[in-house]
Figure 1 (cartoon, rainbow, N blue to C red):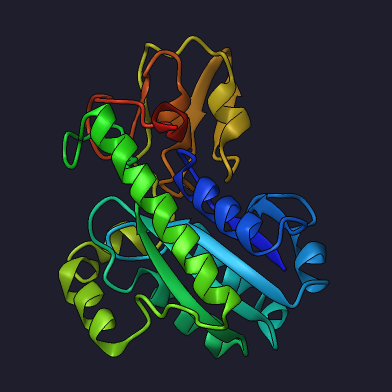
Figure 2: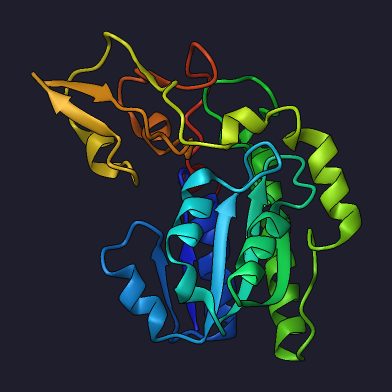
Length: 252
């Protein structure tokens, strides 16, 4: 068994690592951008795939990775995990349907509410104690799920036809253009001091350093990692100002 994840602010990383540790404390858990990840996955039969939901869709980086490696999934057993700030619909189903197309067996799906990770919007913002309670509730759900899986019972959250309809009409149709490709909307203000942290941490290597300044490219996967880490709060995506840097570590 192996866990792979895309995680910008640490929410999904925490959830996948916790679930895997409860199921098999010897299993590896690695980010999607890990070098040689293909070789690692080829040698594993069971995969836990985790990612945050974006407008009731999986991040394009995740979908793109699946599509670029179609032969990898044949015969694999995959359990899909997605994290959400409020609503997911069929967040797990978005990858499950694609994986099945390439020959994977979908074991199940788990959709977990976590603190909102969109740093440059006031929408869904909550106080630190409320977010800590959200994390506690998530941990309890993960523990319950692990016990179910040990008994051979896999949750099927987000995989049904009804969930598909909810996700499609709840958000995905209206915001499809935001998630169908990588985005070129990342903005870096004059507050940038050229520390290079964003360039180092970007999973897509989308940010380059030029003349001691960070310059965004056109392949942002909207993970919010750079925005949540920037010491100057100089980076935005959906909004115009950083409201809160939402790192998981704040809520532990």
